[in-house]
Length: 202
Length: 202
DNA sequence: TACATATTGACAGTCCACTCCCATTTGGGG
DNA sequence: CCCCAAATGGGAGTGGACTGTCAATATGTA
Image (cartoon, rainbow over all chains, first blue to last red; front, side, top):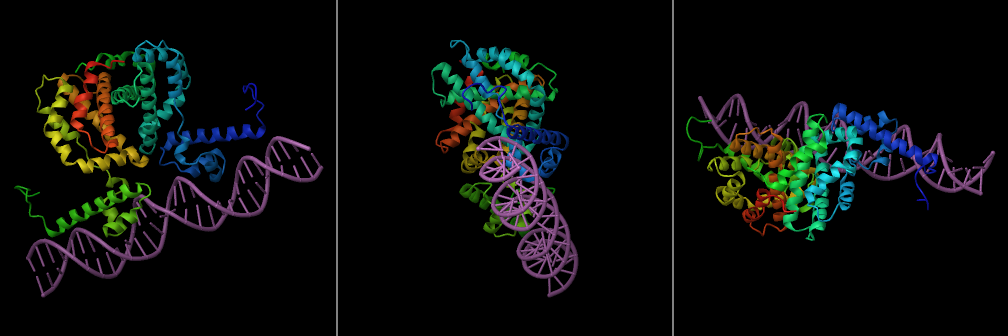
């Protein structure tokens, strides 16, 4: 927390080592999860693979589940949406951001996102967290909609809309993961979000 | 598996006792969960309260989580929907069944449904199952839509629609639970499903 | 270099879900 | 009434997440 810039920060050796260790644990954990599944992988195995003691593991991550958790792209999405014209319909604004900055970010994290998402879909024990995250997403989305329409984010109608949007997001991401990330995620969004805007034709 | 009827079946004392035991375990478990939370309640406590040994607990329920699981109302919904005119729009058909037979069922199970739902929303460890169930619901809904429109249930558009519908369902049930079940669930549906039919006005 | 502090490993220990086994009890059928 | 099979209780045992302590080591600092 220097007064000036933090880029190329003069991080002490200690701090750098800590970051490396944390990252090494996380990476090895992911590798093992991908190989044997989440439940079947023990903390000891992760610790061994990362060449630390299990005590150290727990010093870095309070619980095994915490290795997987990662604050997702909600803040980025919220941020990006705020920079859009206020009178633009919400669904269009979302599409706009996905074609822009956010889309680029997603492409960068592609590999990681792919594995992480696959895990959270496949592994029962991780789904709970996924739900919590989805919850946050819904709330964030409700916030955004409320902000843009001048209504209350707790309004049941707003909540329903947010839930529907996030549900479609999830479905698309899932489809994307099933296809091993071949398709263009942004394009999937562009093709299917209008469903919600125009009403389900069923 | 008698050749004839099973109603008012001549269940032996043995079978009746088993059902009672099973039910007693389940009831006591729910009571304790409601009182102390799911994680904080141990199997031993449940067994004690139900006056069985913990061995017996596991003879009735393979895992602790299984006490909470219950096959939900999807089959009933699917069934009910099939009895609706085939040319009726899907969303209307759903509303129709909710005002009818299915609605009645829900009212009967109100208390149980309320507690069970609250648990699955509040308790992280149970959410995983909730997700799995929601998954099944989505698939079932996709089936129904596909059936009525003559399209493929794996069609991404259909999946999105199903996901959106189930998401709104969930949001409404959740709202209903938050309000301790005061509101009329069927009426909530009637008021908010049209959102999806007409398109989100945001 | 010497000292203070942060980080780590090793290890013992807890808690709880879940398993296995065996002796006892209980219900059903001849 | 008697015997068999099913259901139960009790207890010992396992595995794995997580905690706490203490001594050893690594780092930053004067």
